[in-house]
Length: 225
Image 1: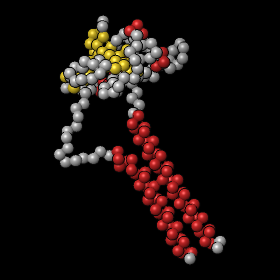
Image 2 (image 1 turned 60 degrees about the vertical axis):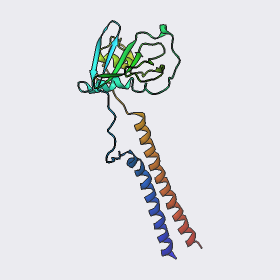
Image 3 (image 1 turned 180 degrees about the vertical axis):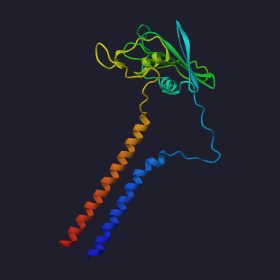
Image 4 (image 1 turned 180 degrees about the horizontal axis):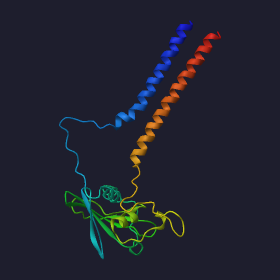
């Protein structure tokens, strides 16, 4: 009787470990790209952008010459395409100076967005209905990223430096953000994927412990009979 119960316990614990390992490995396997013979080529990526504003010379940033700065600037507009607007049109008097960003693919302009880093209530962004690639879209307003003014300033736009990007308090300090780049941070998708993996792993551990406790309880029950 004792050996039979012990074997059952081992089977239960082994099954629990196998389930936990499978659940923890699922996100990692899902994250790996699958390759298919004869699959379509990857979508083209932007290669450069141009920043323009009234009373300012055009500023061009390319992915090959300044990859980090290009990536930081692209983040300010990458979420504006293909989505519905977030806010109603603000009053013109509350927008401040306008900066236009034109994103290029192989030296061909494709997307154009208007940025207002000094708008009241925080940065704003506008997607015009007329785009350089002639594709149909709708005009829409968005809330801009809080890093907009600093990203444009580092690129060369005449924007006053914000005090909240300095350290050291009143009277001095050193810059937190370097002159040639902005801290990129992790994307929301990456954080959600890691959170999902952590939840599955913890769930597997809890399940294994539950099976072990149930097995111990089963042994105690048989021995007390």
